[in-house]
Length: 242
Image (cartoon, rainbow, N blue to C red):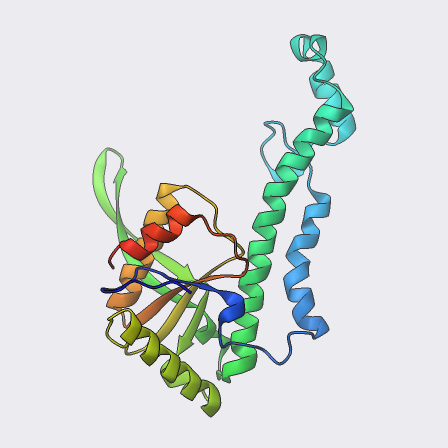
């Protein structure tokens, strides 16, 4: 867990295994299936080679036909099974990480639901509405959009007394540590399996989400299941102010 010496953090970066949300049902088959089901889709991954649409994924035979018909690629030997395997492995790894992230997100919400006793699952995630300046038909326009974060602990909706007390104590201690006011509504989470991306657009969106969370009475938390987070990313989140 990392914090700053003063000011609000746009994201408090936490490693999931250090958190207090520990589901008693973690070993249950249902919970395991929630995590594994999106990952299984990776077995079906096939590269597209510029063919748009999921239905246009290219098989090995299709690849041989596609590249074999290209005189230049065929001449330099790119129509080989090894080239297809390389494309499938590279794209498949991206798909694996993406699907692991989806599994982590779904499992995290399930743990919240198992733990806090919400009357409705709608409280397990958090959405807010914002506006974006766009150009339509050559004219500036403001469009509304709804952004959603992956998890939420809503103070007033938690019906499990022990969880409510543990959460209140933790939030109070942590806000004192980072010199921040205690949020009025609860805690919201952005869940990732890891975070190595250098995408500045993605980072800016995270910081914008955090600013909105603070403004709406929530402590923003970045929950990462693994220990894999880029140091530059972490420092940017810590040093930025929401």
